[in-house]
Length: 335
Image (cartoon, rainbow, N blue to C red; front, side, top):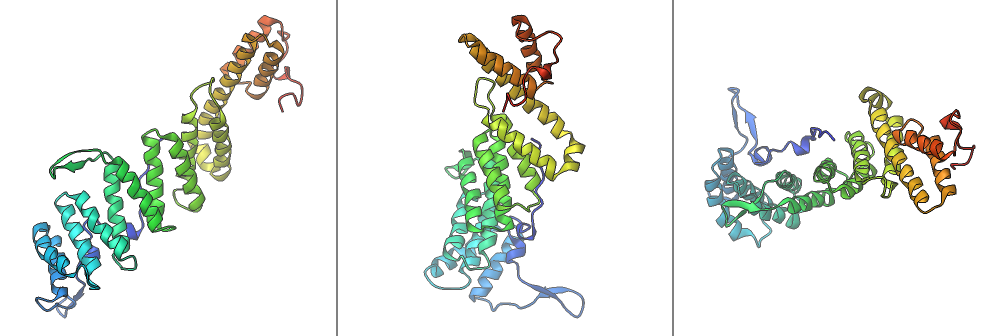
């Protein structure tokens, strides 16, 4: 299934380093120049945080951590209102140093200790960005410098947490579709089907609703292992495909998906019925085999399996050679 680009809302446009989220406010002066709206007094808590934010803005992670580490240590057991911003900034500094796993500790501090703060949602978004990198195959560092530790499971967990922490939000919506497509990409099709279904239930009006419906169809079809196996996933895929055609008729017509995928589902189900008829013949139950052959011809007349069934029935004398395939079953016989 082709992957799509994600159009993320303004809440997700916070860049990984969060410079917009943490930078000082600026205003235009009388000369048309941007200047700080207010300058914190040197040595105050506000000054430390502002200096750390400025250091991050110029990619100086070491300076930001030099300022923040002692300040956080001195204030972490207080009710200082700047603590969530300090943790967020230190996490951003660690990201600059490519220590994303260590940054998670600071983002988790914001999320768990300050759920009502302005920094809560940015922290969740930053964790999602790390999660996506892990899902894309980036490994965790071992011994602080070499990336050898698999981290996809952690990425999946972080995507699930994002949905739990901001339910009903655009952040949660984006995490859900990313996780569903990750499951599909890594061929964990049962989880993909479940996640696409959860997404469609929770976000029926989403911009990704069509994408999720298609993903659920493809994942169901891909789970079918062959004519000797259970076909319930094909039945579900067929029902979902009908729904797709009803909801998005123009897209279905333009893409040809209904015809192409419908033919594939039709052939797969016909092959399973052919296998079933052969099984009955192998057991000597010709009456059941004949019934299944006729039902196959009635339901899937345009498939190669139907042609095979027709030839077999003619060879066995179960059908008149001149009789049309669609007339082999009586009305109601396949119900």
